[in-house]
Amino acid sequence: MDRHRKPTLDTVASAVGVSRATVSNAYNRPDQLSAALRERILETAASLGYAGPDPVARSLATRHSATVGVMLDRPLSSDPAVSIVLDGLASTVDGHDHGLVLMPGGVDGGPRPETVARAQADVVVAYSLPDHAPALDVVRARGLPLVVIDQPVLPDTARVEVDDVGGARLAATHLRDLGHTRFGVLAFGLHRDGATGPVPTDRLPDAAFRVTRDRLTGYLDVIGEAPVWECAGSRRDLGRAGARELLSRTPRPTALLCASDELAFGALQAARDLGLRVPTDVSVVGFDDVPEAGHAEPPLTTVRQPLAEKGRRAGELALRLLTGARPGEPARLPVSLVDRHSAGVLT
Image (cartoon, rainbow, N blue to C red; front, side, top):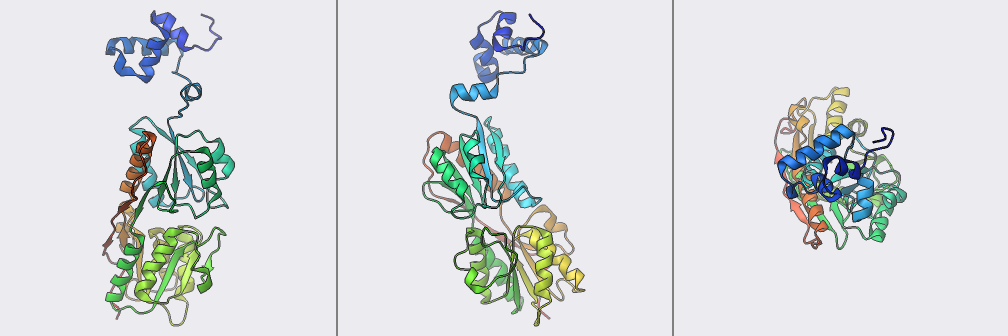
């Protein structure tokens, strides 16, 4: 053969002395061949420098990309909760020969519509997007099946979520039962504008993020009015800055409710910055129970949500939609309070 020509499926078939379809089966339907024949085909392909069928050409021929598109609300972050969910999702779909295409978000609270329009995907997972994100319109226009993790709530879509209201109530009730009456809240962003700072009451009712709305509802149902600091992302530097502001108020809050462990880790650092002891001077409760929570200083009291299970369930729902199944009822996963050492009795 011409050594300057790229080997093809036909090249391998000719060298082995089998049909083109037989070589294709060695890659795509190995159960159709004997182990010995498949091994001979793959060894011959390797010796010729043939790496396998072109996935782009295959997707054009079959009209399937074997890919799950994942839309995120913001750029990829270091939040371990997000990583754990995505790992659960990836491990599930990879077991069924599907890969993930990640589409990070931007100023619109989701990926650019142009990115979604170009993405090769058979099904799309929307991970924690705001209500009315433009990328969602593109998914609908393309007629792709959609799975939602957490938010938004949309008709005719599969969804997996946790009991955010119930989890927030658990955290707030725990602190109230410890005797606390002065609270501060570190919340996620309420709108897509990237704002960070104190939240006026007129900004709360029409928040664009369901998780933010639900966790604030759970907190405030139990504690009543309290100062809320909005953080434009689940980042410990934002939690640190917000907690410093809340803890510098007079009278000072004796307990902080944090919408994520990352925000709570920032709050623990803010307390140290101000010379406050946790939990003697201020109690801190997070939400997620990421692995680091048990090793924080002090170990973090938090609301545990099944992050890996959330990702696995989303992957299972995506695979079901690919079979033509209906979305069905939302899958709501339970939460629980993990009582460690960052919350104590008010003295």
